Image 1: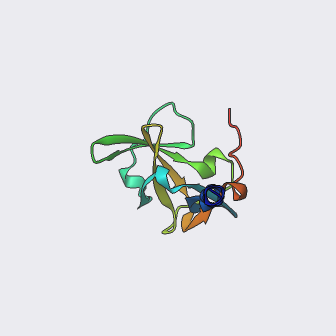
Image 2 (image 1 turned 90 degrees about the horizontal axis):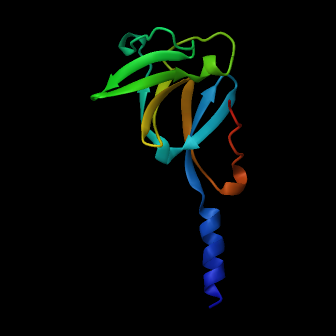
Image 3 (image 1 turned 135 degrees about the vertical axis):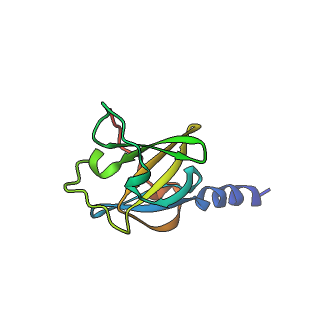
Length: 124
């Protein structure tokens, strides 16, 4: 019977995998299970939409699914936005909705336990 509490503690310390991406000088992580794919950013395949906030770059057709593309650098007011070969779009599946986020780059996949992760800030 003593092995069971040790097993529970081990399961709590296993943690989750997070995709690490950069925005400006900061690094952020998102649960790898929410990531559908990573694509290079190509402004030519993004269709602009009228009357949307500036951080919404538009939409793209991803194998028959219309995906909104949001530039997090603009959303978080990180200064001048420059697109280069490192700029990528992370396609996420969030609550059965597919959305793309534009970030400066992807750097790593890390295994983190719950004690190493801060909760996401609240946004209006």
